[in-house]
Image (tube, rainbow, N blue to C red; front, side, top):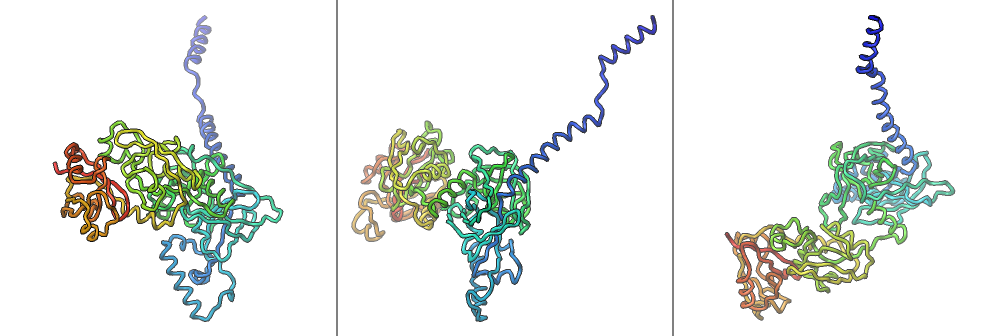
Length: 493
């Protein structure tokens, strides 16, 4: 009986306190998960690599740069203007030696990466990889090499499309993902030829999306995906892919070698540009001719229009742009383009770029607290320099006081300031050291509206200021050297 009781107690204890899993079993379970992830990366590399190409470029003016070396990926890191100066210097040396074009064999001194996007031989890469190329060679993973020609280049996105003749060989085209659905934190895999080491694979994450102002050129499309997947010179033009082996971006920029900060053109933009380049050999963008800033970043206007939730403020209008021919005004707040909400310059540009040149767009606009619709007929994008000048003319900052003196436009003032505007009030003095001066307002600028009400006389101007809260902020629309813009001015407290 004692033996039976003891046995029952042991069985009960065993049921209450089961034996722990062995360390080997735990380790096996943990390793299995890691092995699955490891296998996933291997499969992505194996699936995408046949679509990735290694690009070698021969450029006439820079043949002497590498002094006989077969390629120099560090050349890609030099600023474009400095690179061109070096190329010109080496070209002069070559001519001084009496060499003629065509005497020497092509020297492939530039290199980069690309990705096949059409089975019939179309390859997407960066423009800066192939610009000014004399001869281009493209090599596949299996060693097959083709001569390539440039189908088209787009400076504003820094993308280009190459064409090769497959000669019966079946090429493997990569698939695009919708980068709008890409999420920060997900895996990102870069495949390319850093430092000429072709088919290198690095793994990281999507660090951020919508990075802008990376390039000091307002004419550029800047909506970059940031990644910490290691990208180095030579990766340019290669794909950044997700765990599903789909392109989420085209690797384009790095911020320092080995810093883990790389930037890729998002796949949605890259796919759109590549299709246009394949079809037409060029990209013609629709354009409004406005400079904008996010509404949420303008504290003065947020206080003046508390009912507006989001949008972009028209800070200036190009005098020769499409918007100048419409009813759109500086200080208008654009909330939608053809029903699509816009919250920043990137979204406005994307919404307009999606439309055809010459198409009339309906903009939802908030003006003086009222919702109105403004129609603008788009035009083709002009030279980038015009946009650069516009950006320099546009100013920002908060005002502490008005700091200006105005007078009605007279013949004498018209001659003195070389005015083309006949109505409004000309600014004749700007107080030194005032916020108006720091903001860029200067004598000769013409005020046309105060708080979005036209002012043609001193009386109208003074009446508008009487009803305004100058401590809270006054919206002043003005013409400055032909550019229509606005400022929010505040008086001293």
